[in-house]
Length: 218
Length: 249
Picture (cartoon, one colour):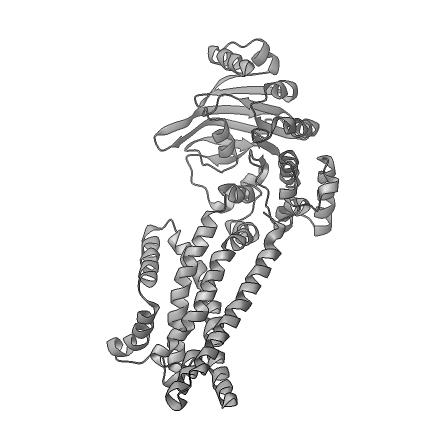
């Protein structure tokens, strides 16, 4: 029995990890673009981006998942996500990436706006382009400042992956819960809790290491 | 021919007119000190020269070449190219915290591929020696005192080999005991090749180092002349009262 549980939980946790990493790969850069949008001097773009961030942050991720998955089929009459579990998985990723990108964008914005204007000016008077100033001077300082709030979001994401089951994407908790119905066992569910704890523990350590690595400057 | 010629520079922030038609002229190798009370427009003038602010009216020429005309629009590309005529040392140093002393100095020359990297490195070493920080080349800004940081900022500006080096109150953010080392470095730069514009509150320093002094008051050049003319024989009433106030402080 134990072996069977572990097999199922491993399958479930692989899906959970996939959601976690693919969401980050998509949302980390997308969030940066959104943050540029919310700081844009072009007011229509700024307004649009701020509205999107407001809607995404102001509604439950669960609702967004449902709407993103079922919406296109019901409104357009076409299931744009494709059939079966593959399609549901893509819908989950789209919802997660948009949701997390919006949260990240606000963290980025806070970080970017906290960099003194003098840093930009010092780079510009040396003849650097705005792009060079951002990537060579500002970005690493931003990264250093946003690490603590980012680690919060990363850990939230670990736990939010469990929402994927709402549109029937098989993930860790689902894998554990199966055994309640089939065998009346609760401990597999506790095991899933341990998985989350271990994973967020590893993240905490990784972030602490990263913070230490960037402590060479102030 | 003047290396720097500024004519009729006007700059407003909202409804406040900060520069009300400033004219300046400077020869190569000269040191110009700009003095005046706070809020008079000194820093704004320097920032207009460096394109950190764009003047609404007036022209700037460097070596006879028109590099700014308030009547015409200017592209980011032109700004980037033209501002290389100038180096800027800020009141708050503005060193890049994640780079060492040497990296601060080599960053821009390397990104702009001014010279081969090896050459940029050896020039940086010379500049670091010149400002007396050879033993700090691999330190990070937070490990330096304010005076040392400002000396790095000076070396960083010089690494781009500007025609004119600008200083915006280079010692105002420093503890009094640290101003001397920075002023000494600036003084040591005085040569027939280095043209400098220094906004300063250090009257003694201005008198000693500058070839020319401009007193800016209420957005205008209220008085200009040699240090002797400005300090020993001030004609303008505003200048007299400014100098009296400075002496009292």
